[in-house]
Image (cartoon, rainbow, N blue to C red; front, side):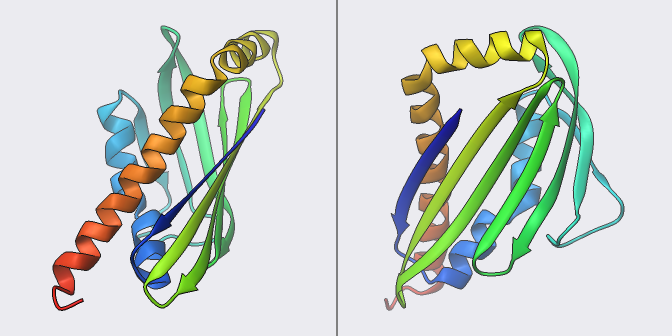
Length: 158
């Protein structure tokens, strides 16, 4: 199952990139939702091969989670590959500068199942596709709004 979302953000591409690759904030949000997530290795800034391990509750059962940055082209593309139990996902973020102060963020989430229980979960997600899409879109918009607020606060003369 593939989901695609895009949003135009009123901030320069480098600021948008910094906001969308702030993995400390992503980790904090995941922990707030009940995930137990730790970085593999002692990396401080996002880079190719950076990884996480941990566990997360899915449908009442704790499942192992592994994620890593598979592609990292600063200012352009970041692809994070993740495995939660029998479900694999690819989360791709791409930036397209439209003008010096306007950037389009395109996010693609692909989910694949390799076990029977993961296939059943994926079928449930397909039935609720509209709601899943709204949640993904909401997350991208919220992240974009945070980047815009930060950019406007740092550049009030704009």
